[in-house]
Image (cartoon, rainbow, N blue to C red; front, side, top):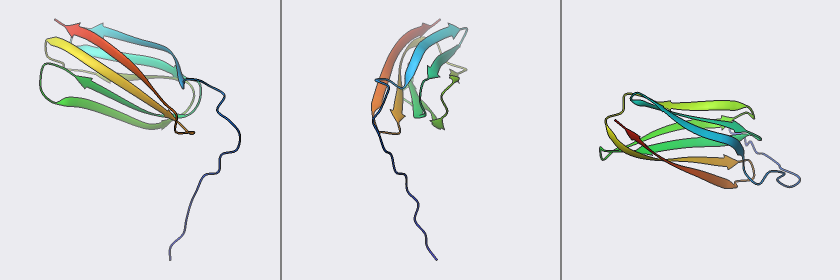
Amino acid sequence: GSFMTGVVQVGRDEFPKSQRSFRQTRRGNSITMRFRLVEPAKVTAKLRGPTRRTITRRRGRLAPKRHSIKFEGLRDGRYRGTVTFVDDFKKKSVVRTSTVIR
C-alpha cells in the first residue's frame, strides 16, 4: 500500500537569517567554511575555481549548532563560493565568499 507523510508548521519565523558567525579560512590548498545555525536548515555549499567544474557539498537538514564544510585538494587560483541556507519556512539566505589559493 501507499501512505502519505507531511509537515504542519504553525507560527512565524523568529530568525531573519538561519546562520550566524560565518567564517571562511584558507590553509594550504584547502578552504574551510564554519558557521553556527540558529535554527534547523538545509545547507548547500558551492565552490567555483580555476577549473570549469563546480564543487558542491550538500549537507541536508542540519540541527542548530556549529558546523563546518571543508574543500580539500584545490588547485592554485581564485575561488568564489556560495553557501545557501534554507530554513523550514523555505526562506533562503546566501553567503558569498572569495579567496585565492597559492
